[in-house]
Structures are given as structure tokens and as C-alpha cells.
Amino acid sequence: MAGPSDPVEGRAIASLQAPPTSSELSADDDLFREDLPEGEAPRGGGRGRGIAIGFVVLGLAVALVWVAMAARGAGGLGQDPFGLEAPKFELALLSGDGSLALSDLRGKPVVLNFWASWCGPCKDEAPILAAAAPRWERQGVVFLGVDSQDKEQDALDFEARYGIEYDSVVDGGSLAAEYGVFGFPETFFIDADGVIRAKHVGPIDAQTLETYIASIMN
Image (cartoon, rainbow, N blue to C red):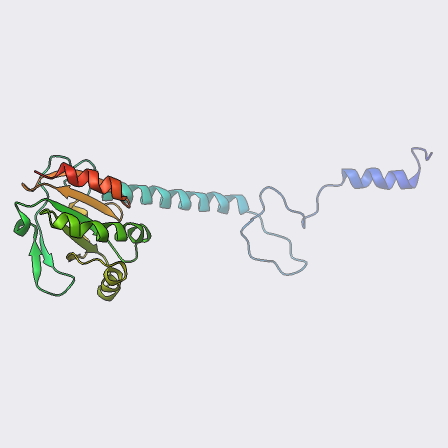
């Protein structure tokens, strides 16, 4: 066994006690730095830049939350519009055949569906609405779409693809905001007196649709 003065053991002890060289990473090294030229040691200050990036990310997150909350409260209806009068409007028809006002439909129950061709969940519920509309319309219920923030041809293609034959009006986004719509699709069930009796957020299924329509029938 080598003694304390053995040069091999001395070298081993020295290597264990040696501090890290400048080329080794430390807690303060910048994890987001660009690749350095070969042989160049990393610069310090990484922790400071990391903290700064963290504050930027946090600021963006707070801003997004604020925008979402503002959007939720943008409409006078709020998130629970039950019993409130449906905001009036008159907008151009997607078909190009003039315009339509909500007041034109007074005296009839209305299923008002906010949608867009680029909305994935809207594709799930479109066949359900298309299938239900003819039967309910024979009983006096009006189905009306609100195509919001969309391209005209994309919207027309969407209606043709899913067999939607009831009217849609074109909304640049202001009507959706007035109704407090936060995402698409959303559907409002309005009775013959123009009062909102229910609101459904997200794609609707056939059974839920039937239940809501029954609530606005006289």
C-alpha cells in the first residue's frame, strides 16, 4: 500500500481538492446563452438574465389573464344572462341577401349560435344543429347563426360542408363581445319575448339541445 508520501496518492488528493476551472458550468452560468467559440469560457450574469426572463414571462401571463377577464366581462350580459333581454342587432346575412334584425324574429323562440369556420369544436356540433333545425323550425323555432371574425368564403364552405340551411349573420366581433361570448361555439336560447332562458358554452349535443329548446317553447 502506498504511504502518505506516495506521489500517486498525492496527485489524487490534489485533483479532488482542486476548484472548478472557468470552463465548468456553475449555478450562475447562462443556460440560454448562444454557443461560445471553442475555448472561450462562459460569461457570468446568467442568473440575472434568467430572473429578467422570468419577470417578462410572468408579465405576459398576467396580461393574458387580464385580457381574458376583460373579455368575460365585456358584454353587459355577463356569464349568467338568464332572464335578461337579448341585445338587439341588425347585421348582414352571410348569404348576401340583405340583413336581418333580431327584432324581426320577435314572437318566435330563437336558437342563436355563435360560430366560426376556424373553430374546431364548431365542427363537432354543426351536424347536430343542421339535423335539428328543420324539425324545430316546423314548430316555429328559428335557428340563427352568428358567424364571427371569419372569412366569408370559409364560412360559406363550412355551411355547405355540414349542410347548414338556416341563416347566419356576419359579425366582426362586436356582437360576440356584447353578448359576453368568450369562445366559440356558444349558443343562446331566447324565448318569444326576446328573453334569454339559457346559454350553452362549447359544442352542444343533441339531447342537451332538445332540453334547451323545450325551455323556450310557449
